Image (tube, rainbow, N blue to C red; front, side, top):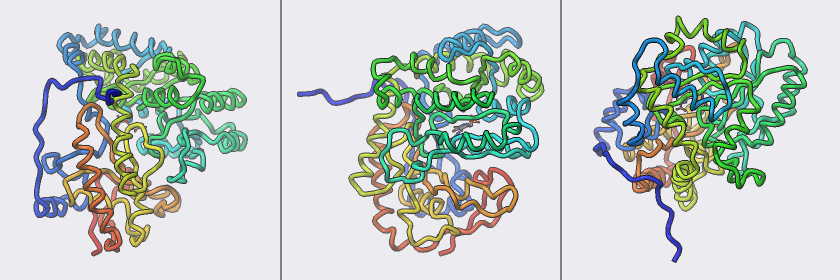
Length: 458
Ligand code: F0G
């Protein structure tokens, strides 16, 4: 008989987790103002709030930590990291930062000014925040099919080239760069095809613009290119990565995802002027150029993590688990952004809590119900996260309203995945009786979802 699929690693260290009662969870939620970011992690049984910094490191990464060089200047661990990044991406200039948003802060400080327009595919919220806080505008040029959650298409993270070209032709002098997020987190962890990256490059060249990849999940994107684009079916993940990055001028990276570390990030680029521009901001914001907010040991672990996670078996194991969760939801008839994303399943709350009006935040309501049901913590990627329009201050209800179930790398087993799916099914089965959502009691001006305080309306 054919052997079943199994993980490409075995477990060497475990961390106990604890279940709780529904009464406990109801009390904890109230104390947390119905915002799951305010819960203590001990109050969570299975944590799907993010795949960022929540993965398990390998024995080789832990071993590398012991040999990290903590020199303030010129640390060996920096050069090991830099060489690895250059080998995988082709970019010769590297600046470490403490995480992805810090890379955005440093690079955008040099590149973005008031009134600029930065087109891209569903900018992540910190990316959008770093653009809007500089009084510039993030223009979303994602393909329209990304909004049809039930449509099966291989590359729903793509940039709509016509939309991009329109922005460029109408605002040529106001665009400092184009940013492409691989994979497209906000649209559901959906990949961007190599063909699309090539088309973006072509349009960028036509208008004399540079391109940045927001690369938090670039290795997962490469996996999808290998499995869905005929031209690359025999290429290695590392070959695909080199090809992808050859189409960009630089990258910002949250290493907490595809770098397989708990904290870290970097900027890499092929342009000396960008490097020089960013350097000036790295030193005051992050630290000296050969550590930029990271410990030597963390840079050492990241170098190993980048290498490991650009190998096919590692990515296959990961994506297989996310697809397993999707297959269970299919069995229960629960709608999500199809096909399964690389790092998460994005449950379509709009299609589930049809009795809860938009103004009462269906995805947030579903997040709360899922936590109450089983202590499973998801994350709203919807109308609360979308923040208000910077000009009109109205809520932005134009996008999608998801509960994201992000799967940490190498952390949970398939049995945990079964619990997540069953908990969601129990909520799904009583969806018709959920008729009221939540209202905002307090919110921050930008990136409100982390600290928003809510009140249930029922
Ligand atoms: N870009 C993308 C596509 C991201 O998903 C994130 C973070 C960042 C940039 C910022 O990186 O967290 O290291 O500062 N995403 C996390 C998430 C928080 O849960 O999706 P960071």
